[in-house]
Amino acid sequence: MKCDDNPSPNLVRVAGQGAWVERPARLEKDGGGAKRSRAARLFSPFCLLTALMCQFASPPVHAENLLTALSRAYDGNPDLNQSRANVRARDEDAPKARSGMRPKASVTANAGPMYGNVRIPFGAGDAAGRVTNFAKDYIGTPRGTTLNMSQTLFDGGATEHNIRKAESGVFAARATMRLTEQAILQNGATAYMNVLRETAILSLRKNNIAVLEQQLKLTQDRFNVGEVTRTDIAQAEASLAQARTDFYAAQAQFKNSMANYRQIIGVEPTQLEPARPVEQHLPKSLEAAIEVALLEHPGVVAALHQVDAAEMAVKVAEAALSPSVAVNAQVSNQYDNFNGLPGSRGFFAGASGQLNVPLYQGGSEYASIRQAKEQLGQARLNADLQRDSVRASVVSSYGLLETARASIISGQAAVRAAETALAGTRAEAHVGQRTTLDVLNAQQALLNARVTLVSAQRDRVVASYAALGSIGRLSARQLDLGVAFYDPAAHFEQVNSKWIGTDTPSGR
Image (cartoon, rainbow, N blue to C red; front, side, top):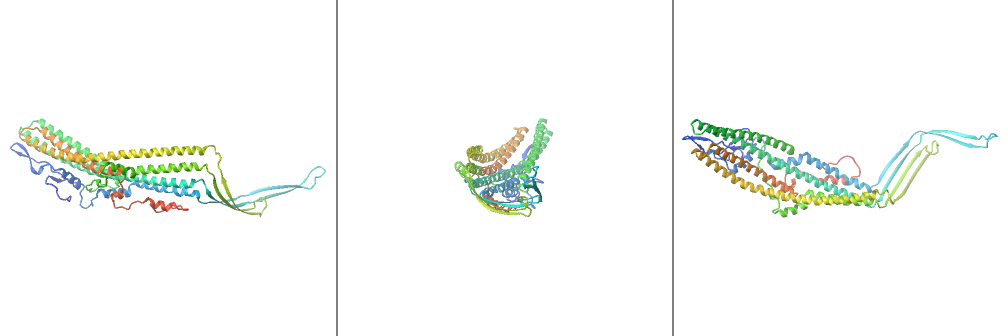
């Protein structure tokens, strides 16, 4: 159905909004009573969906659906881009850990003025015991350069375990990034549906004002002919004033939803199309959903990688008690640096093996081992906590989805019943069996039923995205957003074996 096609003779387009809403009921005089015309019958629940679909209709602007909105958030949301940058920063932990078994080299140079005075006694002393001394002053600039090189051959396995610890940390960071991606996509879907809901509610409340204005006019006409009292007019005026208050509140909520949409998606919402739930991606049973969540949810995956990293941290701490073996080499050139002899020059080159066997360093290494073991226990408890949290989230989200489904069915029935009740109340008021207050109450009941149905339709879509996120499958790939998917492995492969260089690679 196109937005330019009137979905029902009961609907009219709202000026400036582009949405089809209910035509105000036309109450006609008929023998001193009120008769509701056929064209003013209240629209069905299907027309609520039509109003959602056609809102923000503006032919020159291309329509945007939920998936394109989520694509915008996936590409440009600052929180998600920040999380990706954090993963790239953690990637550098791996080459840092590999540096433990790589050679190290340094050059030292020294230069500076030196003053020296040399006195050498010689010869026999005279009768007074005085000895003749040879004295010489030295002023020079000793200088030299030294090249030092070392290569660790064995460090008790510390480097190997540090590498595995770093890799586990990288995988945990990737899982945390997936959590952020899920949160952005779920928040984006919620913001999208909130705008749809608030727009539909705003249209309903605006239309309700038009209906109550007609009701007030009719009541005043009936008062003029003596059919009702001034109390009926006051009741109609009070209902109209309350309707306007509700409309202003709906306007405020609509603006809030628009601002939240802009924050998450990155653009202002324009011509939003209706959205469908993503229930086709969900496991059919709650038990299957829990099983999937405990294996795939990023929160659980991150916690398990953190356990692996904590296990490696224990082994790194224990390696401090192991002996280490290294080879050192040194090449040195020195000038004017030997006993104050100007013009002297020295060249040295040598290599040596170094064995270090730790015996006791004050007990700090033992404290580090105990601390690492406690942190390992904490990581394991956190993994158990994450499993319990994910299980509870799955049960809750599936419950909310089932509630939303049932609410739509009951909401449709409530709207049909409220339509029938309003039509009957108006007919009975025409023959004097109902009061103006009864008509106003019936009109309010129908409005409330429609608002509830619109909210239930929104809740079903939002709950389906929440359920997909609770099992860990809410992702751009799963939704097939049609964007260039971010691959964190590309940057890791670029830096993992990098030996030198300060420029960041392009794998972003």
